[in-house]
Amino acid sequence: MAKVTAFVWPLIRIGALFIAAPLFSLHGVPGRVRLILAVVLTLVVIPILPPLPPIELFSYQGLLITAHQVFIGLAAGFILQMVFGAIVFGGQAIAYGMGLGFASMVDPQNGQQVPVVAQFYVIMSTLIFLAMDGHLLLIKLILDSFATLPIAVDSLDKADIWSIIAWGSRLFSGGLLLALPEIASLLLVNVSFGVASRAAPQLNIFSIGFPVTLMLGLLLIWLTLPSVLDNFTGLLMDAYELIGQILRI
Image (cartoon, rainbow, N blue to C red; front, side, top):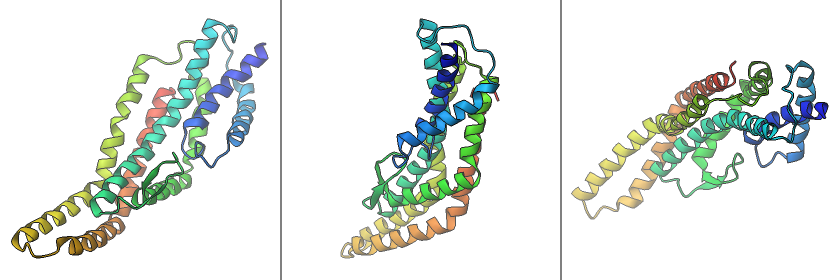
């Protein structure tokens, strides 16, 4: 039973990470693949585990430890999910401002319909995430956490939970920061068209305004793409710092 316990608790922490982490939680990734990865990593980490507490797996304290392992894995993956959520939020704001809110496609991260502009930003951000070996760094952090945050009943405290809750505000602030240049520029264009429609009511502002805002939005996306990706990189680094803080690394 002790060997089963030493296998199940690390498996739960690693498996919870794969359920919530970007890329691994894609609907296109079969659950069997995630399970195999979790089992392989668990077998790798078992020999280097610190001594486990002498607690039965199906006791009350054992259930508390199991819940803690689930929360640790989900928290690490959820923080990175909020980074990609900020990208989706910023892309949606840009799409609605330039008139492309009706053009939607399925986001492979969550299986929901999102505007194509947001999906474009998600694809670019995912490529950067892979180029930076972000998925490997996340796996390394969760494996190192077994030494810095050993399996125990009191592995997390309230300060860690409040840190994760406070990080949720970065989803909106980060997304707004990503989309602010495009939103401000498109707002000025819409105000200009509003003034023109008041000065010349016979002017068909919809037939003129939509192509202009659409072309201007595409031009702004092209011009501001480097700064958007730089902001995403900074937001990603902040997320990894928070994960390291929670995992005591």
